[in-house]
Length: 390
Image: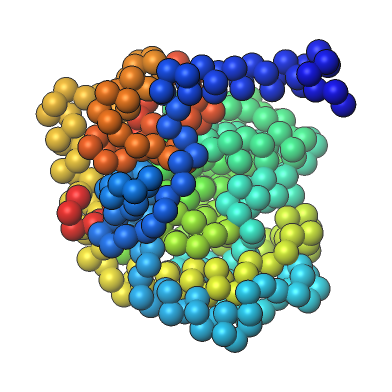
């Protein structure tokens, strides 16, 4: 295709976004995709020669660079090498993969677990493999994009309820046919606003209307609960979620995603989900790092306590200065700005460097991409950690 002499929906779409990017760059308001040159101690990084505090990381417990985790990854490379021999179904499964999945199942108090190459792929494949045409999915309005895409790919009837509005959810459940399969799905901690799903009420509705319950715990593992095991511990509910999804790239300093559930569901996913069957296995070092990380969380509970202390101090400080942090009560702290231009201008005025949809240094916030936040609610979202200096 001759891009510059073609006028269709593809070229118009590309041009519109690139014009937006060029406009931001020309006004010194583009702060994305700046590479980190070096990871330093105490949640510091070096960007363009400057040492900065990292307030944008998902490393809620500060496990990046942990000696035990690093050593586990090194041992895995020495034993298995840097890659695998293929997909998990054929030659790609290593003993470290099985060890990791057993660790996850124990951590999440389930019978079994299965891992995938990314958190996005996990939601996409699990939802679209479990649900199909004629089924009904009920999804929180602010759920992660990977959940939305999985719902759309499934072909099921897709219903979205107002954010954390259990009365609206019940109305939708009540109107669905009684004899169809139903799935209710939500983030545990919402990645843009930091608030927590009303799990007790949602669980009550799922029981009442005979619906499966799937919760994305990407931002609750290591954050919620005294031991950091997640939203069930936080609410004191025990093993009540049917499908527990999580990532290996937030609190867990690796890469990948997982689902923990009954052994029958996990076996089904191993033999039916395309992202498992047709994707290469996790590299040995990443599997080993993730495996050790879950153990470190349980062995070092002070990290969760420190994170909670930092979170309360940070939110309280922002509120005392008049900032609107919405309904957050977790390590994800939005600062509502009202307009895109205000958020960008605040970033530039405070001389903050931003990278990967994140910013750090003088004003400890993350300036979120317009693709992530609702268009009407531009905000900057700090991500806290347990570093002593924060």
